Image 1 (cartoon, one colour):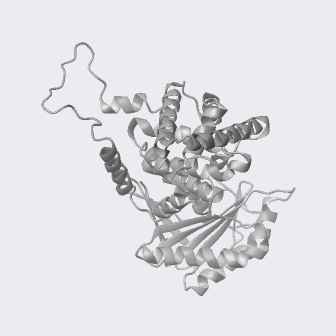
Image 2 (cartoon, one colour):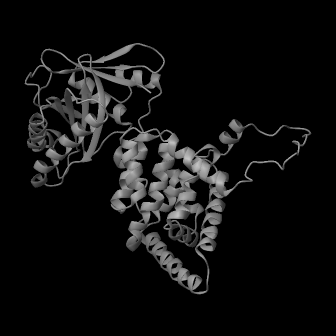
Image 3 (tube, rainbow, N blue to C red):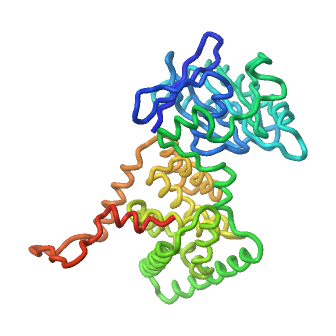
Length: 420
């Protein structure tokens, strides 16, 4: 992972540098243009309709905590938002061990309603000013504040028309900057835009959504007689987990695809009644926790695809039910090293149900930079306790000799079963 550093020059304009993952070289980012270009590499995606704040630490400097929230739709909310985000970033940085020496602010929003990028910049200027005042009230200066819109950027801090003209400056073409080259060398990945990532998890619409809601109604009605007939929670849970495993195998065996084509393919692999039964079954906390154990090795990829497909099936009156599959998708993303996507997906889970405790805990832990290995080991231990014979040979037995081809290694099994 690349470590990003920042320092302040005498004019209080941030001069940032990044350290490659395999070398000790530094890439200096000394202008608003280079800061604007670095933003998606800092986050792991292109933020859309977003307020982003990055803490800057130390004399030599480094980039620290990062915060992203949606830009409030009405200006009446700007005062409270500015105060809250400033306090959240600064206090959070203090809890992690260091008060910031400065903050860099980005306001990212595309034009709408026929306005230009310059008009977006002008409209958001009062928000930028409120953020600067809120940070200043906490004795942390805003070193730079940029607006990114319509492929251009503007600085709210720099008065120099030579580097920051009124009409804005064009953003670097994707993949052509020094930062892009350094990020590629370090193995950093930009996973598309925030809008695209969220769009892939949005509920289905149209006739298929109406059909899915009817299937959810049928599944909900079917649970009542099961309970009245004496079916235990364990029996219902066992059916749910068995169905999930069947669907994961089906997903694993499907031909590979990419992007939205993969989503369409995965949608087609699940019929409405199967998806509805699984969505309702995952509302049980204990069943959801067992499903969370499918977080690594050859189970992770098909589980992630299944949770995404189920989240898209939570339509109509069942929108809150998406919290369970979205939280599982966020957990698998985090467990497998995709922190940027995990934060987005866990945020969507909380948007579906703000009181969903598992999503709250994971979202907080991910944002605090906690290592997920602690939770992974807890889940592994719980699985070993519940399945004591899993992976064991009978006492005193010897491994049977194989003829012909050897069994695939763990690494090859993981590759063969990884899927999308």
